[in-house]
Length: 360
Image (cartoon, rainbow, N blue to C red; front, side):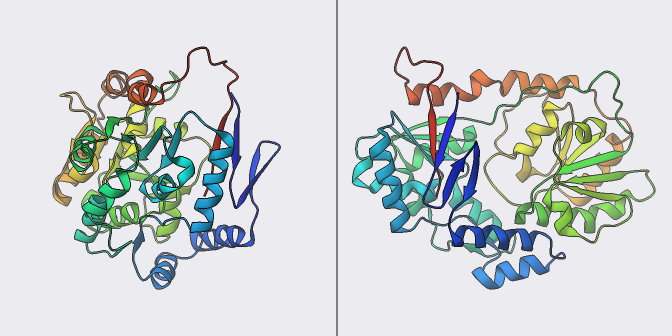
């Protein structure tokens, strides 16, 4: 299978995708610069520019929408997948009339905005109400929710639309037989997004001091660690890594100290499929399949979180339950059954069928 990628600001050449406009290049350069600034400075610049702590998404320009509509008319696809509500205005273009359309709903965004605002932050766009989100979602024939609770919410918002659940699959990746977990080593994986930064700042301020003297260390993987910059002894930031497996396989326990958000915390599935149990706050575990053997220890306060970490960091549960949880609830067939039905591929399509992606 091959994929062609095209867009008003990108070009594909020898299997690689490149920005093709000055505005796109400038945006990439600005993000790169912000990612290496000291903790707090990059966030301050973003806040000054946007006049908000977090931007959930932005809508395409009329020019970009027309480019995509003409591309869809030229390609004549059997189905159009729309990445979040922020791309759904494309479905109002005349060329999309009658298309089998599927919105991939990574989140219920008005609830995400409410959760982040409740934590004391400002969010853009500011007028993203339940009514507006329902109107944006309702343009599609199908909606893929990331977890069952949000599928029920979206069904109530859009009663005339086919809503199904398409969670992230989590294929087991057990530790090799010659790899041993390091007693007392914690791991956290996260981008430099506001919910991750907020959660880790809370963890380092309120929970980490309660772990002093217990022989516990922490590895932070991803942009979150490098964005924090000032880390206490025993905490190490690795930034982006080519392969998570070595870091997750050597950890004894994962943490997810998230205080706000919605959707499905995919990091918890990454932890579980590598055999790790996670100590997690209630917002972090929302939307996961219920199972008495789920590899999550829920802690609702800093004291409870620290107690759970102290109890498990040197005596972690074996990986079997975490791996079984992934197999039982997040296999490929279960994850993609609803999407496969919505796509309704024509019989007899060749294995070499080409797929395309249009980028905004």
